[in-house]
Amino acid sequence: MPSPIPIKSVLIRIIKEANITSEHVVDAIAKDNGCEVLRLPPYHCCLNPIELIWARLKKSLRKRNVTPSMSESVCTAIRECVNTIDRDLWFQCVRHVKETEGRYMHRDTQIESPFIIHVNNDSDDTSEDEN
Image (cartoon, rainbow, N blue to C red; front, side):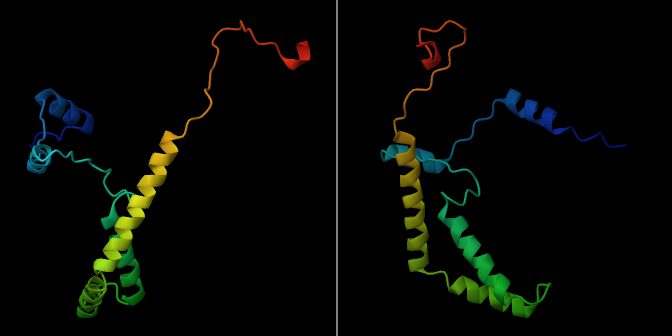
């Protein structure tokens, strides 16, 4: 009888105990050239141009696909949809991502008034009712 498959928490503990580090060749190349690779959350549509391309491809394919199976007509529709992805579309998607990043950075740098919570009941402030 085969041994039972360990549950996720056990597998995560085993991986952490193994102290595995992942190094990517592209990170070393970037570092040697004075750059740093920033990893995006996977499938994050706002910050990943390829996700915008995939969304457009799937939408276009849904309009053309009339069969539930992988028939020759579906393969032809896929080829036609892929052929609509050109340099200009990529440029638009990358520009959209850069604009989104700019909005995020601007929002993150906005200085707001401090938000202070006093833990104890003592307060130097007097309310307007007390005046």
